[in-house]
Every structure is written in C-alpha cells, then in structure tokens.
Image 1 (spheres, rainbow, N blue to C red):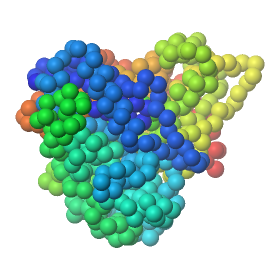
Image 2 (cartoon, rainbow, N blue to C red):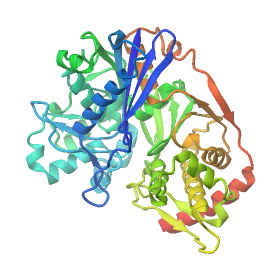
Image 3 (cartoon, rainbow, N blue to C red):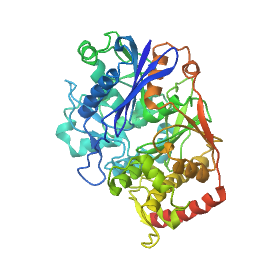
Image 4 (cartoon, rainbow, N blue to C red):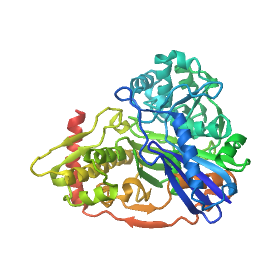
Length: 492
C-alpha cells in the first residue's frame, strides 16, 4: 500500500511516494526545477497564482510516476502540506477570483494593527492567541476595502491546502488548524471567532466545512483520478500548514518538543499543552495537528521571512552556474565571523518577530580591501543563524526552552556553515533526520486513513542521521552580540 504526500511550497511543489507498511520513501521529486516566481506588483506585496500551483502539482505527480518505481494504482491516500497564511478566493463555480495573497505579503499590516487595538490586546491574545497582524483575516479585510468587485463574488475563502483539496476532490473544506493560522479561530470556545467575523463584517458563509486535520477531506474526482493515473477510490485524508506538518514529519507532537526549518523562510516550532501567547505577538500560536477541545496541543511558531530567500538572492547576485554546494565551499574559505562583515536578512516583507516592521536586508561594515564573495556568502548564513537566535530568545521569554531541536536534512541545514552557526549561536544541539514535508504529509495521510493506529506508529521507524553539538559558543556569542547591536540600531 502506498501513500502520496504533496508539499505546496513557495519555491516549488514537492511530491513523495511512501510505502505505508515499511514507512520507506520510494521516490521524491520537485517541480518546477527552478524556484517559482513570487509576484510583487507593489512594494511589500507577495502573490502567486493558485492555478500555477495546481498545474505544477499535476506535473510533479506525473514526474513521480515517470520514475516507474511503483504502481500508481497502489496509492490509497493523499496528504497535503502547504505554505501557511495564504488567502485564496473562489466563486460559486470554484473559479479563482484573484492571485493568492501569500504568507510574506505585508499589505495588511496596518489593518491588523488597527484590529488589534479595536478588539483589544487582551481579548485578542487570550482568545485568538495572536494579534490579527498580517494574517489571512487581515488580508481578506484588505480585499474587502480595496477590491470590492472581487469581494462581492466570493463564495469561499481557502487556505492553500484547502485549494489543492478542492482541485483534487471538488470538495470545499478546511480545518481548525488552518483557521487558527488565519486568525479566525477562538481558542476559548474552540470555534470560529465571532469577534473577528463581526469586526470585519465577514459573512459566515465564506468559511467552508470544518474537518479534523486527520479525516476524510474528499474522494478524488473521477476526471482528476484519470488525469493523474490514480485509482478512483483515493481519498485526501490529511492536510496541514507546512510548519505543523514539518513538526509532524519529525515526530514533534508532545509538549516541549521543538522542530526547525530553514527554507524560503525560517521557523522554530515548539509544541505546548498550554494556550501560550506573546504579549507583543512577535511569535504566534496556532492549533497543532493533534489539537482538540479535549487535548490542548498548540504550536508556538517563530517565523523569519528572510532566510533561504536571502541565501538564494545572494546566489543569483553571484551569477554563473554555481550550485549551493559549491557556494558553501567558497564560503568556507572565509573566517568564522566573515572578517567583520554582517548581514541582516530581513528583505522579504514585514517581520513578525520585529513587531511587523518592514526592515529590509542590510549589509554592514563592508571593507572593499578585505571582503570578497566568500565573506558575503558566509556572512549571509551567519546572519540567518543569528536571526534564529534573536527569535529563539523571544521564545525563551515565553517559557519555551528547548534542550534539543529537530530538523530535516534539507535546505540550509545541508550547509555545514549554517548548522555550525545555528547551534553555536543558539547554544542548542540539533538532531537531523531524513524526513521532509512531503514525506510527513504522506505519513499523515496514513494516520488519517487509519492505516496506522497512532502517530507514534507512523514514525516508529524514523532514525536520526546525526546530532550536531554547539562548538565555540563564546566566540559565536561575541559575534551574535555585534550583529544584534547593528539590528537594534537599524530598528531605532
């Protein structure tokens, strides 16, 4: 029996096929080969076309089939992971009304800040566990104010994973976890927030049916099954935002466990059995994949927009056909600390951990006689690692003190410089595993389809690749404090 996992990322779609009983990855593919475009018609805006997501998903599944390593008809369930906080609008014919406003878009910051003040900080933090901020609800309010013709045509609002489910099955549904990441969810009532819906004058009909994360979200539409070469009885049995899903893929489900990712954005995600919130909403709390009214399980999320995208931007600026491995090798020729060069990697929209400030990226202390491309490459990765440390200190202020952090062996965690900088700056060991988001989504589908009796069983064969312990912590502390002083000056 096979499971199909789809990870709808910002840069690409990734699909993995997993043998359910052996919990073994058979094949994993990405599409497109180059990083997908983020559309930015105005400064601070970030959009993508959902129909391009769908077209790339179809091509990615077909690419996996082309490996000829499995029989597509043996796939029994599909799981979906997706970029969080996006807004997809569809009409009654399930036609997309505009480009998706994605997670790193900053246009609704002022709307969210005003809602935070009008609804009351205490009310928002104790019931929503967040400021409305720049999340999905505020983005919808922006459409209402600025694109009334489109707003009037809305039948349903969807998160990106809900959109993929719709395309696969024709069903319109969502989850409490998805609604919480959009800041539509009231944790005090475990229901759609009446306060948010009333404040923005949103119609309750906009919200599709609310399903558990692990459940039957719809059977594959016959025409889609034929197009994808799959059996007609395949069911979508799991969907979750990329960060709750990443935590699931690393078996981070118990209070106190912590996961991290460093893709386009960077995230530290800790699980708590309490309704945790930061008074300044610099970190955010959402319903974890196993949250319910009977079992409180929240995911406390630190997000840094400008991580992998900073690294890829530098890669483009270098030019040529360098791969990341080659760039990492060049960076390793620069000394630890990059000869005093410092980079603030905040050029991808408003940063929540910086109080929703649009700081932009900055290169400090350039010496034309001492610094070259090696120092720029190394300073980029060190700056990203230091931004993780800055955010982790905020999490520590709020009672999360991880003794170890689990991460997938992917993206920036493939770089020796980044890993050593990360553990050195945070003073926290990292455990690396081979599981990634699409594999986690596949195994999540197995849980949702009752192939596994528990989540523990789904990850019973997961093995750690290696553990990286902090080294030279005193030196990294000195470098971090220098970097932090430059950030504070920039903020002021």
